[in-house]
Image (cartoon, rainbow over all chains, first blue to last red; front, side, top):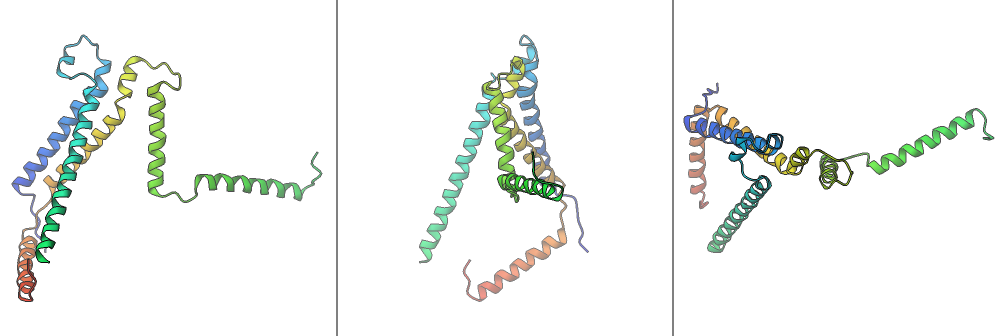
Length: 89
Length: 123
């Protein structure tokens, strides 16, 4: 019989942290893109949000950074495996 | 006036219907793969968004609607990413551990390593 136990401490913390981060990002971004245009421009809430152009610029920059890191990681792994095969030859 | 009578006219109607249906289906590609479906969907949604944002359709949308519309692709991407991140986090948090199976697996890995090392495989 397989004895199953609930996830260990670190797993739960990391998992719930990821859920919280994703919820925060989602609500802030939704408020920024969807809700703000319908709120009167003199309202105080506009103080908490950057100008609208950043709503596209920041995710695009983040996406490009992600691609950069993925590319660097792939390069690193490929170089490491090349070095290993060269050593065994 | 059609010189056909009775059965012959029915055959002409049936024939032309089949011809039309064949033409339509060969245009739409009867077997559409999932990739083709996704690309079609994206193309249709993308062209709708482009038409609306550039004002090519000539509709006068209220300014607030226009403000919501133009970042929409970025918004959908970010929300899809958030959904993926949240789902992964939730599954990590609720994944059940199997202590016995983990220990058994570790011992089997040690056994296998020792065996392969004895047979000459270098790690």
